[in-house]
Amino acid sequence: MKKLLFVQSKPPHGSLQGQEGLDAILAGSAFVDCAVLFTGDGIYQILSLQQTDALASRDYAVTYLALADYGVEQLYCSATDLQQRGLTKADLLLNLTELDDAGVTALLHSADAILDF
Image 1 (spheres, rainbow, N blue to C red):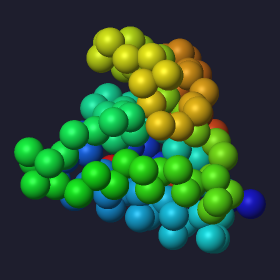
Image 2: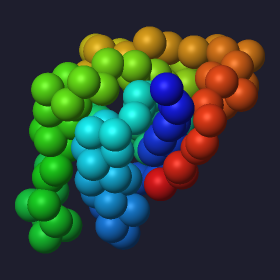
Image 3: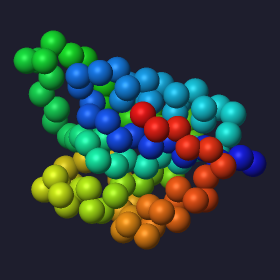
Image 4: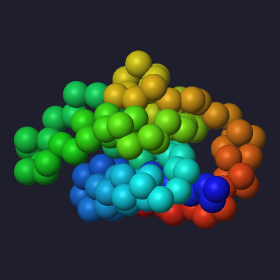
């Protein structure tokens, strides 16, 4: 079975890329094996307790909790990017596997296709 890797690398607000990426993950999971990697500012997409009222933006982060219902269980984040932002896994909505830089590279090489949002 083909494996799609969705890379969420953009911040959650200011553009629609993050939400579009989430929609693509949910849709793609119906057809192929999907994994998700949160890197860079994309880690903020799954930050707990987001305050979006002042941004006049919808908080879609809780929708990520539905990934398990869609069979998406391979969830990863860059340990380097997490540390650079002063975050820990406890700050996030999802239980992710932290990957070092070599692990991120290996994950990228293991995918049949990569979609970056």
